[in-house]
Image 1 (cartoon, helix red, strand yellow):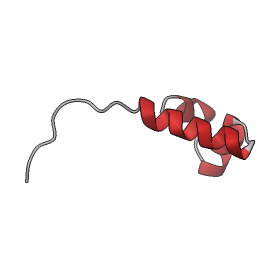
Image 2 (cartoon, helix red, strand yellow; image 1 turned 45 degrees about the vertical axis):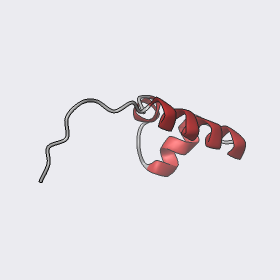
Image 3 (tube, one colour; image 1 turned 120 degrees about the horizontal axis):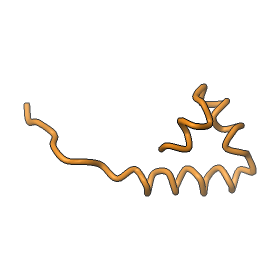
Image 4 (cartoon, rainbow, N blue to C red; image 1 turned 30 degrees about the vertical axis):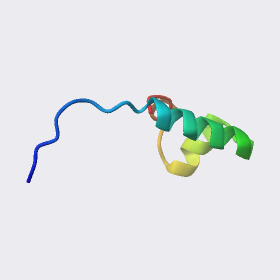
Length: 45
């Protein structure tokens, strides 16, 4: 098994989530509730 090294840039994922959320017309708080996570956790993605 190979070892994973380095870091991963989550920025493109976060931007895609934000665009999809805005197209759906829901707030960050509503999405966080649907995902059963805190809005702060969602913001950190």
